[in-house]
Length: 378
Image 1 (spheres, rainbow, N blue to C red):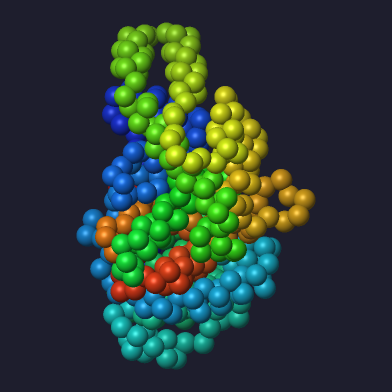
Image 2 (cartoon, rainbow, N blue to C red):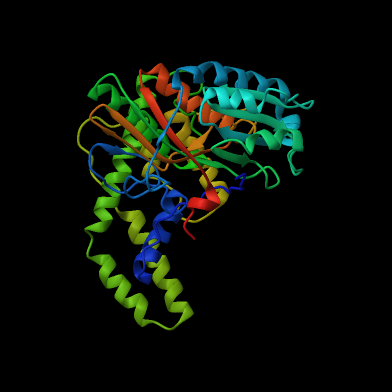
């Protein structure tokens, strides 16, 4: 069924009030609740979930011709680039269909003429039709073929917003290759969105310095979370917070908590990136959006920024069209698994991720696509 999705707000709010406010304090330092990964087993890296999870409980189960993704991604990149920011904002709807097989997909579209302004991309039995006018229903002649799909989804049908959630599994050439892929994707997903990093699937490969910067941030956040969990201060703070009935006292306790959280400095062994460590030591004390932008961009400059127009303060929505949000990722021997992935534009981020995986030797791809409203859980 064609459905509507929304940008996913990360989960992770525990039940008792003291821990809720603790998470809020961490969010004030690092961004949205749950953006920073908690410490998990070594084969699980990155993302905003506290442990690995697929959006769909059964996980990915639909084979995908991952070897065809690079051509589709290149076509989507060229099309959106040619459209430009203003035109693409006016045409930010995509119909996405996963068919039983290629033959049934071709049969469904055999007599379909694409309306002006729309275009089609396909990866095996996965097909995307992009360029549908923002804020308007999809034309009947386009929507009807997707009713024959095993899955039919809409991206961008809420005034240009709305995302598709991807679960994915593939097999790398070796255990080491799987670990390298998971680390690259996890290190990207672990960083707050306002650092505006370029994703692994877009732009120039990371330099060794940029790789170290991303690894340092991920290791620091994992160590930071471990430090906070083992700190007896929080149990006492929760007791004091629960006992007060004064707004002024609660505000004072919140300020105290924020200061305590900010004063914690985990120690990292091994090689670290000095620039990232210096930025982390001077993270914003208050929830000032401008402060976060400046701080995030400072991180991004160390880790590899995404594209940004010359003279801009931060990347525009169009600049970020290749970006995505990685919920969780892990390598289990040769298997790479990614859960709760969503993208600013699926035709770029989703296809780009598939192309990246194929380029790094991952084969036997399986996916599940979800309407966010079907899996959000609230």
